Length: 466
Image (tube, rainbow, N blue to C red; front, side):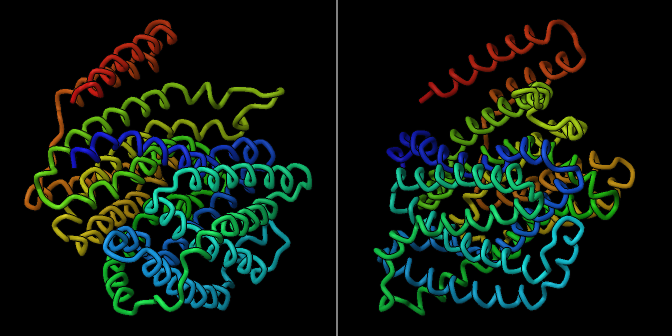
């Protein structure tokens, strides 16, 4: 474990580059959406992403976690073959169901000329390709092929931007252009991964016993994944219902920027999850605590910077056009709330090892279920009062509730503590910096520089510790 620990941050950095570039697509497209689409069209695009994220969860239903769990103890071709064949059959069945019950997609008629059946076919193509691609990208990580991972990620980014510009800007296709671009990108990404599939897929190695174990392990993650997507996406749906689709557009623009912190958490988790899955006992808690303290401090630092800099980011101009269309600027006010929410979510991720080490995965749906219930109730109560601010606060309350619940259970299972002195120092200087910054107490550039100096000193000191 010590050897792995020494390489942890380096390995994390390698995969984070690819992951962040892949997930940064939605942020890179934000200037396009907010400058070329109306708040109504942008709202529908964000709702489309919400639907895809939710259905992606049903297509995946925890099989990526199963792949991580059983890969090290099995022949790689056997587990890849078993996983891919099962996923393909499951994906076909689910796709047929989606097509047969696609009538609710008439909801999009306001912004596209496509019929609900045509929209369903586009969605099915996107979802099926994304499911297989996701599984193969996990395999790439397990086979330790970082260059392959980076190449696929970068091609995805370049193609996504190019196609969105072509369909939305050149052809002026609006919402339909965003949908078609997603469809083509999903197909190309899968084609890039086909060589790996060809080399590893061996039909005769399909193993029913292994599949049974993988499915049993993955099932508790299905409701948990659904609850996660509901926490992440219910706010848009309920905002459109309790307020307006225009508000969804404003909220979505601010949320996308605040969710940069979520990207950092997910990028970290790419190496964090395989790291703690290799752990065999409770003695590794010390390594978890050291890594956790460092990561929490990094999250506080980046969240504070984002909360300070978002007004400059929104107002930044390229060739006379703002990076974020000025119709969407009001949505930026939720960014500090969203960033704080994802600090809490980061702590939740750091508290996950005992669930796997102590084999408590049956509890996972309960943690996410509590968060989901809090999120939906808070949205229902707060949106009519505070609008999209209420939706942002609901996300925060959801992550706080589930993190407290998990930390309480870990007192029994395997307590993971952190260096509260270092975390408190970083929290205090961050809160003070934000207070002075937004209260206009002194020169904002000077305040920012002082914060950078004080925080960088602490971060350097912590990372230099053995």
